[in-house]
Amino acid sequence: MSPSRSNGACAERSWSSRATLVGFAFTASPKLPAAQIRDLAALRWLHSGESVILFGPVAGVIIT
Image (cartoon, rainbow, N blue to C red):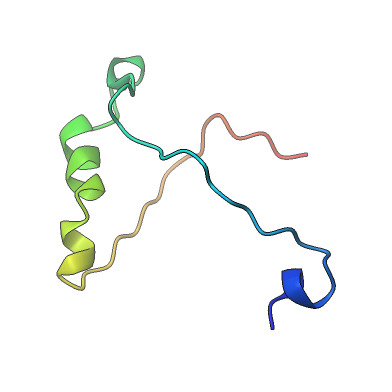
């Protein structure tokens, strides 16, 4: 049984919207390879049983 169901400490999240790359500003980060990101988003790697490892510096994340 999951923690959210056993003691109520963790609430289950219901996602009402879907994230897309349609309006993403790739020009804001010129080092971000737009073609490669779109290729990953197509999920061909998942359907072919491959793994993806993403590494590098994290930007825009606030840890408190």
